[in-house]
Length: 330
Ligand SMILES: [Zn+2]
Image (cartoon, rainbow, N blue to C red; front, top):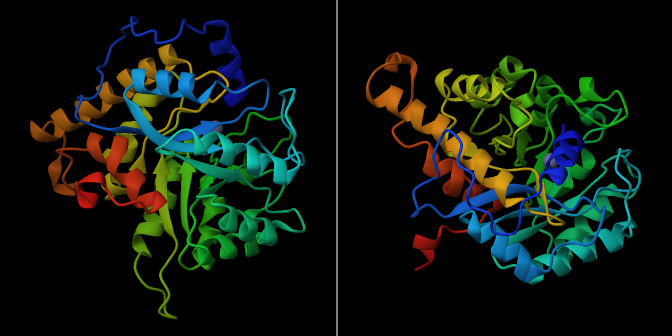
């Protein structure tokens, strides 16, 4: 999904700070401090300067989020990568970039099948990395839980791709939502699943249910792994509204564990796309809130859906990365 969308957008890249295009939907309330939990380093060119990046993100109302390092050399992608892909260099680059962009946290893109993956996790913690990004290749994540145990031990969250995988390897089957049930074996792990598992968003809700039913403490007294939802698209076109309605209206309490993301890169944070996506999603979320308030949906099965935007755009991110909310700090 990513390369296709990215290539398309690249052609349509707007001038900086473009705010003109309006589509259906609406921008969030100005008071909401938007966090974009899913930004890449594609490695296909030079990143924007920190000043330009901040200029572009803030023109969309985005004040923070997570930036992934470039992917490991051991992962196959369709892109031509021009940056140093040695593991140390990837880690240094994302740390150096985020050192200049307050509010944006460095995430290290890990391949858990590499022999020294556990050490990479430990080193990342020492260097100030705040979490990990993983896209599973041709393997079952359940066979590589040690690096995830190390991440849980280090109290660092892990963000997974989930659903169809657009890269050259036929790896989609390993990224299906149910593959992640195995993470119940990693106590204390905080992890997120992206893209609503498209095209398996019913299965995605089953996995949400599985973690919901088993939340709290395990028999051994340790905390159960906690699932967060990364709303980053991957659910294309007409599926977006349907998938978001599935998420909120199935009836599980997802509001506080759902974060918003955009899947853009630090080489070109395309403001036109960012705003288009924000408007579209906020339009759909507003519609769900309105349907709930006006009882156009059967509220008997539902948790409170009066405000699902603020948690998705702002609050859940703080919980996921372990930062206090600004009002708690003041
Ligand atoms: Zn992505």
